[in-house]
Image (cartoon, rainbow, N blue to C red; front, top):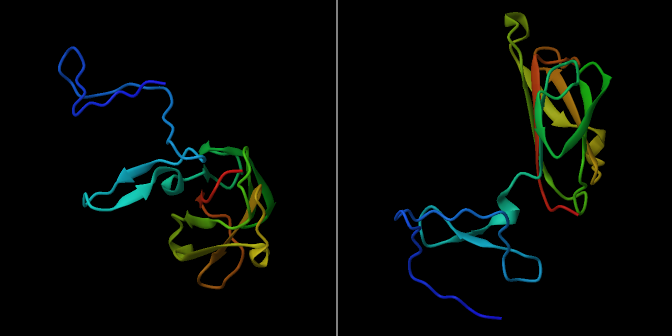
Length: 150
């Protein structure tokens, strides 16, 4: 195998853009480090990417998503989002939130349900009004998952 070393890459037009279909690190896991904003620290590209996200209305039909195979409406304010590609384990970070435009229901709290019984394939999302903590279908809801893919 040959090694190509360059200080600067320029296209024929002088631009320094590179168009590629696939980028893979040299470690066994294909991990790639990227220099951070300050220029002195690095971050792992794979670790920093969201592995699953979905935006959905109370109809439980995704408006837009990534790695999402469906949304299930379990009951008022209680939804399950299912991934197309599972995570490597149930150890991941979940961010969920919802919004409401109804002035009398101005506050909304959200959490992942099932007493933290997370699985690699689904996440339960529960939405409650902050005024009385009643289950509530928000006008718009979303979930974002960060973790390792299987």
